[in-house]
Image (cartoon, rainbow over all chains, first blue to last red; front, side, top):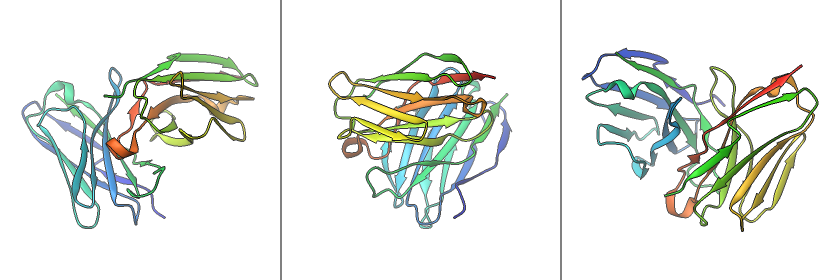
Length: 114
Length: 114
């Protein structure tokens, strides 16, 4: 099976702009979770989507949003970018139904905000 | 919400020695505890996990122990090799309350010296 893929791999934006990141899960997986990884804050949960519905949300401002399509691909959007949004954004896919439900991470999108 | 603390933040060991990483969690309802390894520039990869109804699990040179009463769990790597050098993250989740949300520890950078 192909692994989790994310596009683009690298992005450079300026403050105030918005950005959309994409995640394609492993075939058959219906859950996609998003995480932000920074040197200072580590790995922090953003949200999880399962069958096109947001199932859980972390403690991030409303500028961070996401969605999931019927083919389980997911996108996350960050509006009005701030310098502090510079990070590696990782998505992870899983079946969404098993317990335990192993999460498989994608390679990440490195976002730099100037 | 859940809080996971991980110690030490860095660990240097001689090849062949053992490495131990410890994590504590705050939510007694957490019931799933995975460990991820992240090599430089790579995605986090699951190396072992444990459920709350199990006290210990082993996979070749890697073992994890869980003490639910004390709310802590540990990763043990025996006979360390240079390829074990990476950052290791522990995580905790409460599947019933929070779906696939993983709360991560701050990470431990392990360096295995030849």
